[in-house]
Length: 280
Image (cartoon, rainbow, N blue to C red; front, side, top):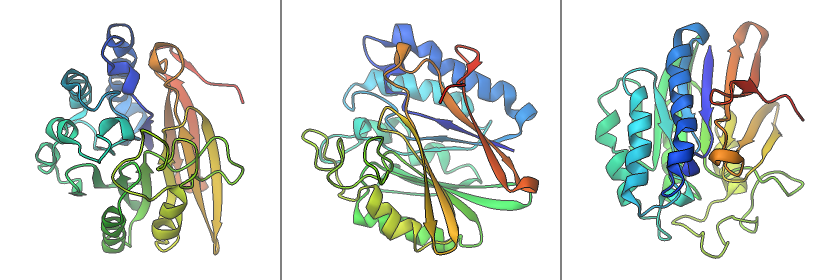
């Protein structure tokens, strides 16, 4: 079965750029719909920074209209990135265009917190049951508490976390700290909470043994970090292409799960370019 990961889409819907870039976003969603049966796509996850400007309603409208094509077709989740919120964490337009009420009617929707900036979903594939947990950029302590409650409630399910910022492309250790570039203390980017990637690792990933993967964006880069945690491995994957032409050229991650091999095969594909990434 397959999970599709949507990296930052902010420049696809950005005011002044969308006429050139929106087609990339639309091609991603259309590809998911067309390949749902062929690839057994069971879930879609968005890493946040859905829009570029938190206060431009038309950007949210464009993003909502594109994502709405998945409503009732494939279960999906998303988290609020730093561009989706004001500096104090307020996310009025985010919650207006991606409200809890839009998703609560689906049986795969398991809950939300702090508006809809954090949310979780349930799905089953192969012989396993899964929990997808989405955490906002720099989650608050209350967000962290909610995440732990959800992971404990569904402790019998394999779980992965999607959050906007977890891995850095620069530092040797690989996981963001409060002093990382573009992290919580960066001028003009601070949001509601104070928990960086290292805090998510310590407070959420390590205590909950059902977590096997953390997905993120935020930094323009690709990186894989493996955390060896007391006999288990947790994979962290960074995907962000928004500085490439046309706001990202349509690149996204395709995660193909093969339980019989105990493996996840990851490819990076662009439905817009109709090609795979093959470089390092």
